[in-house]
Image 1 (cartoon, rainbow, N blue to C red):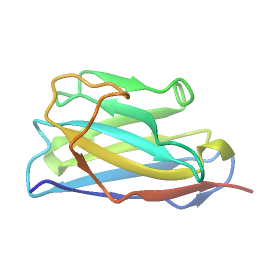
Image 2: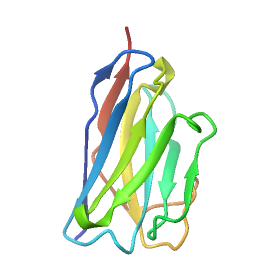
Image 3: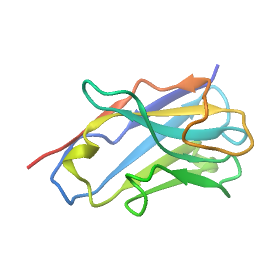
Image 4: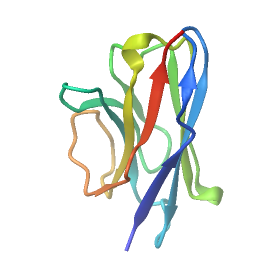
Length: 123
């Protein structure tokens, strides 16, 4: 059974950077598209970014475009989300998700989910 574990969250100042990791076990990520989502307190879950199984296609929410970069290292069975120029409105619990789809989109549905890692952007 595919399991996903997020890590790398924490407290960071506005303008700072953070790199989140999504590590898979139980199965290889080679055949899975990976999406990153976030949910702030009192708000609905929002798609942030995704990357196709091949790594050749990516998608980003307008709110993070130009600041966040998604990448994958299939040899490490891990997907990353590099977050730069962080803003207080980026504060949320960040989740990674996986599904065996060819492309990717931030509005796609994903079958497997991690437990989330919290990110707080504050002075």
